[in-house]
Length: 296
Length: 286
Image (tube, each protein chain N blue to C red):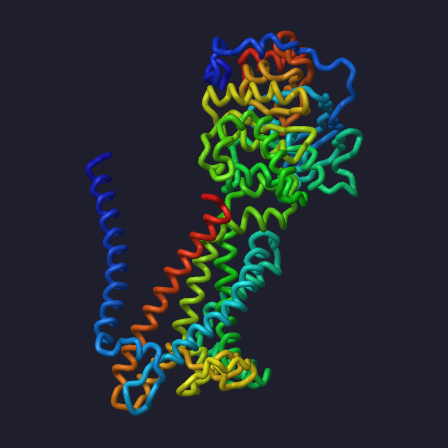
């Protein structure tokens, strides 16, 4: 190696290292900032307590809504996205239909979420008569999450080496058996990444939910009310459901109480912590699943 | 590249007598196990292989030799319809297994592959336990776990000469944790567990060290009593050691592979009918 190429090599390594470090520092700074700002507010009664307009209330019902919406949306997104990913990776040929699907996937991903929200308002809230509800919100979230999940699932499945597929097919397995028993287990890490990325968007999305999931959340949830058709039950998909991200937006933009800043800071910290816990949990689960299915 | 340039994967001196002393003659009275008649393979507009007529005798080892690009592997993959998986590939002519045309209209390629197994060049065990690897084929055919499956797994591992090394931890240990040679024997065990009649091997030892190669060759010598084996090899010493019959392929002016001649291995290597074969065997081309 000449001196010049050696210097270039060092330089490139240094720059890349710095960039990577910058990302980590940025993340840590944001988390530290949020935690410091919320330091005086965060306690168990804030996390699980009921909100209040006049005092420093909690975010319990809203945190519940965030997780509820997450689960509800993933119940729709993951199976559909996985099937779509399998189709695109293993069955779709080259042609107009495939091109059209890809074009649609990319376009929907680029639509601003407020537009998706308005579309959800027209279609799910009004036309489907769902009203402002968790279900309408979840369907709106599915609109831009499904193409993303499908794309990430497709990539995860494509990344499985062909050697594994041929090995299975040569043993007289059908294509579906091969996908089910060899390809999917090997694609789990990639699928988990897809689930994490799409969940992050559910947690963080506000604009698409304003006009679909609505802003009305009762001050108190009665968790013993298991009637899923009762709009007051926290288990009902047909009730309005303010999520944390929407709540932060709402408190910041129109909150009038004395403790508005503390509530917004506290809610933001909880949102970030919840996302972190979910991501780490999903990775752990993915690793356990992989170990179970592959004896790796 | 000539034969002399190519490092022999196995020095002749280390060979056990079993290989050289074994009678070479193919079974005297036996119909063909598989038969290719006028087989051509087309990839899109490119003709990869043309007009192959070849008989594969039962319970014998047939070696496919020839220079790179002559279509040996392509022809091998015609024998269990693995070419079906290549987009744009088209096979014409007929290939029979026990007088059944495996390209016939009502034949499911999945069934063909249960009768005709394939061992790949690079060992490709699944990322599962050794047990699950071997049980993979039987399970896909609907066999449930239990003593029958356990016995089948054990028998297959024994047949593939892997049992002794893995008997204590084959239920826990991942197939990927084995050495390259062991992985290849695991792949053979995995193929045997589906109870095929024919085993195709596509340069099964070319990614292995000399000791592991020797074990694979010993294994082939053992398996030929029960199975019909077709092996593609780049290594002519290997072909002469393990096979009863040898088919020599080469590439024509049109870049399509074709069969030059086929015969008993001893005759092909000592007294070939065709000049091309002699040139290749003696290292004058290829």
